[in-house]
Length: 396
Image (cartoon, rainbow, N blue to C red; front, side, top):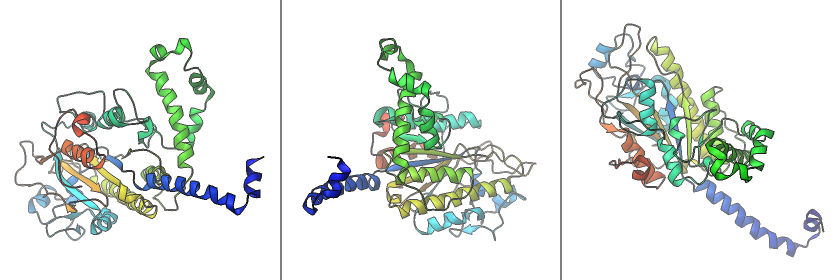
C-alpha cells in the first residue's frame, strides 16, 4: 500500500505508534541544535586601531599624541571612569550591559611583525613570529577532531590559512545553494561517480580530487540542512551583515559545524582614519547585535562563543595624514552568555610605558586565548592543536 494512503487510512491507535518515534527524532535534533557548542571567529582585517575602539578618555597622553584623531571625551560611550567605547559601538554597549561582552586588552605576541600578511599568518597559524606553517590552528583542530570538512566553515569564497589543515581543509561558502549547485556540476559528479575506479584509486586520486569529492558531499549536507530554517531577524544591508545572517542560518538549522569564520575588511587606516573606522565599527556593532538577537530568538546563543580579533593595533601617535601606522598590541572581544569575566578582563595598556618604537606593550599572548577556547569551550586538547602548551585565561 502507498505510504501516504496508509497514513491517511490508519486508525488513531496506529497513528499513536508513529508519534513517539517522531517526538524522539525531533527531540534528538533539538538537543543537537541547542546543546552543540560553536565558535564564531570574526577577523577585523587591516589592523583595527584599538586606542580609538577602547578609548582612554581620561588620559592626557592620548589627547596629546592624537590632537586631531582622538575621540572627544563628550562623545565616548563611558564604560568606567577611565575608558569607554567608540561612539560607533553603541550596540556593543547594550551587550556589555547585559554581561555578554568581555574585553581583553593588550593582546599580541613576542617579537611582533608589522606586515599585514605575516602578522595575519602568525595569528592564523598560532606559531611564533619566526616560524612558518602551512596549516592553520582551526585546520589542525579539524585534523584532530573534525568529523567532516564542514566541521568548520568560512563564510567566504576562499579559505583563510587559519582553516587549512595538514590532512583536511574546512569548507568555504557564503551561499549554501550556490555551493550546492556548483558541486552538482557534471564535471564534479563525474569525478565523484568514478572515485573507486582503479585508475582513480586512493593512491592516485590526489589531494585535489579528494577535496572536490569532500566538497560535493559537504555541499549537499550544508544546503539540505540549512534550508530548513529562514531568519526573521533584520540584518544590516552590507557584506558583513550578510555573512552573519548566513552564519546564524547555519547555526539555527542545527548544522553540525563547530567553528565559523567571518571577516570585515578595511581597517588599514593610514589616512583620514576617523570616518573610515567610524563606518566599519558601526557595521561591526550593528551586525553583531542583530546576530546575537537572531541566535537568542532561536535558543542557540547560549551555546555560541564569538571571538573578534585584528592582526595588530596601531601606533599611539597619529601620523601626518590624520591616520595611524601599524602597531602591535590590541584588544580582543569575546561575546557570549557563558563569560566568567564580564566587562574588562584586564586593564588597558599604559601610555606611559611604551616599547622602543612607541608602541603599546603586549601583555597577553593571543595563543593563551586560543588555548582557553579550545580547552574550556570546544573541550579538546589545546596542546595537540597549538603544538605547544600555553597558560589559560579565565574568561569562560
